[in-house]
Amino acid sequence: MEKFIILGGKPLFGKVKVSGAKNSALAIMPATLLTNGKNRLTNIPHVNDIFTMKKLMEHLGSVITFDNGTLTIDNSKIHNQDAPYEHVKKMRASIYVLGPLLARYGYAKVSMPGGCAWGPRPINLHIDSMKKLGAEIDYEDGYIIAKSSKLIGTKINFEISSVGATGNALMAAVLAKGTTKIINASIEPEITLLANSLLKMGARINGIGTNILEIEGVEDLTPNNCENIDDRIEAGTLLIASAITKGEITLEYKNSDHLSILFEKLEESGCKININNDLVSIKNISDSIKPVNVSTSIYPGFPTDLQAQWIAYMSLANGTSHTTDTIYFDRFKHVPELIRLGASIELKENTAVVNGVTSLKGAKVMSTDLRASASLVLAGLATKGQTEVLRIYHLDRGYEKIEEKLTKLGAQIERVKTEEF
Image (cartoon, rainbow, N blue to C red; front, top):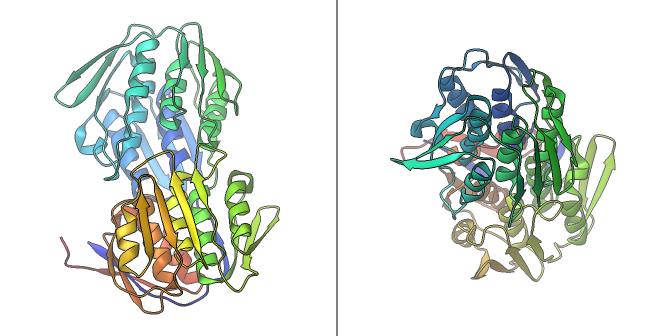
């Protein structure tokens, strides 16, 4: 295993480029399974989740090359429709292959998904949407087995707006017979990119960017090229890193409209955000961090994937703030580790009450999931001593060379081997 050793207390300065978005890449990759031929995806980050999806698709029969941020995926020789546990256990996004395989081949056998070790993220919405499209669903030895001679267009009304379930239903519906209407669809940027990518393949979709999608099924789709969006969560993490260290950085980030709510909250806390075309700059204009309450919600609300980082930031605010997660009620495994660094945080159900302290102290802390890991790194950057962040393989799932970007901005952070098991 590896860990980060961070010598904190150094403000971040400089400019870095934001990588392509991991979450959207994990949707447009399996979408290519709907086509027979070569697809070209650009601006893809080199993170472990991408390689996990690559291995899964290669098991299905995809021929994939990954070079300098470009994925070339040839699906003309798919010979498996089963997604085994050895691949799926590593991340929940593997469930994305269910819809495309079922739609194109009439059969999919997908292991129940794994991923971060926190909170229930049920897949019942995925399963229910496949059933409504006419699939027969069975469960056997931890696998979902879906069959259908031909999916039929229908109305799918999600009780809860779900990014993953919307993506799966959308990919299944594009090859279904007739019209499908998805109500309360996710409007996250990842879904908008997926829908636009499917359009380029020949799908017929109306309502893109809204919570009602209408899909007229077609007989087949053709391969195409798709440029991935930039990663709003990486961008947000880096902006908060600058704010917590009282630095001044500029991001090369071409999707600033995806982070409007974070910009508002950062400015409330005492920062100044400047947007100039594809450049986003931040600097602290207040002597102290002002406490700001946030409540996570679906897009365009405050992202749950930035909740942990925000709590780390608020731990140094001049006063008390409340951070509530309305998406995942128990996504707070980072809190005990932040307390080890000297933070004063009390959990009340799905709300973290953060009493700002004047300083944090270095200590050994342990990563428990992807975004929790990021919060510990940010807190470590702001300490006046040495912090060791263990089990950083969680970070490698979703952040591309994060320590190199932070080092470029002036952070003193080193990746080293550890004997920990």
